[in-house]
Amino acid sequence: MSTTSARPRAALLLLAYLAFVSLGLPDGLIGVGWPSISADFGVPTEAVGLVLTASTAGYLTSSVLAGFTLARLGVGWLLAGSTILAALALTGYAVSPGLAMVIGCAVLLGLGSGAIDSGLNAYAAGAFGPRHMNWLHAFFGLGVAIGPLIMTGALGAGQSWRWGYGIVAAAELALATAFVLSVRAWRQRDAAAAAPVAAVADAVSGPAGSVGVVAEPAAPPVVRPVPVRETLRLPAVWLGALAFAVYVAVEVAAGLWAFLLLTSGRGLADGIAGLCVSAYWGSLFLGRVVQGVTAERLGSARVLRASLLGMAAGAALIALPAPAWVAVLGLVVVGFAAAPVFPLLTLTTADRVGAAHAERTIGLQVGTSALGAALVPAGIGLLISHTSVQALGPALLALAVALIALHAAASRRPAATS
Image (cartoon, rainbow, N blue to C red; front, side):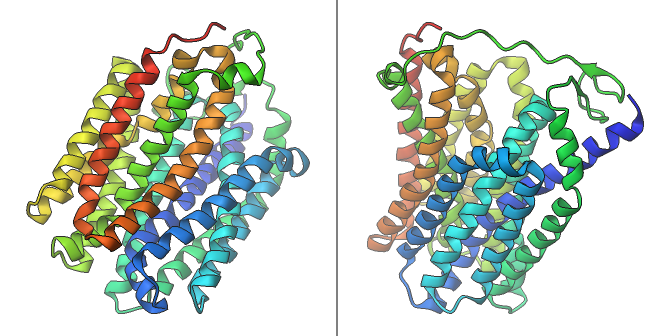
């Protein structure tokens, strides 16, 4: 295989990584920016739940429709259009006169993000291989880690929170331009999707990690088709779906409310607290890079159990009535421990429910995780508004313990036969 043919794949791989970074940026903005946003608009702290719910509604809608849109437009135009939509939504955040417009923009942002996420995952599954698939999700964590730095920098410079959203909107627009210019390359790769995939030339891509070495795709296992009702009757399906919702609730709630906890609850300055929130998301990124390799060596089940226990330990540190550095340490522990949980829970789905039910169950798990990301953090915000921000730690600890129990219960169920 020539170097020329490999270059488009390398360029598209870079664009895919940048796209996942861009997916995480808005999530990192709102946690640091929300105290200023709510003060500007004169709305209570728990009003963030309306924004999260609106974004989730858009995300779920576009995720469901992405498969049909992908077939009609191709991945290149889907990514270009969705990124333009996200840029427009973030621009709307920056110029919004009130909460109502922010909620409308949140729907648009969810629509764009859901399509980007689904389109890139579908593309990457056939084009980049499992290691790059895991690292793509790690770069989502990198994007979320950069978001608080952008917002903290804007606020620290004496600017409005609107500048944070404006900066990210400009970055999204630049990425959308790159997608438009690369539409032909994405289309060419789509046409070759059924062919053997050449490994991307990098130092960490495994035994077939040089240009010109072709990795033969593994033959998919033959799985007996089963009626949908049989899948829905399995307790392990619902236990696993609930576990996903609880996991994502912990991840999102910790990042969303940590800034308020560290400033109002533990007395840190805004700039330092913003850096600490960024460190939380950064630990999630680092954990996905490191623990993905660890799971290959020690086994998914062992790493998953250790990660769930680590999340509970980190949440316990946050819950302690201790100095701010203890809470910061707890956040970093939660982030690093939580890093491999989502991919490993997905990877072990067939072990819990059987291969014949795995695909449907994964879809259900992803859907419930989006609901958990919106509803539970919003509920914690309501709890905080009626008690104090110190309630965050105990709430995270209760969720982490519940997650351990759910995973144990789901894993004890006898897997369905395939």
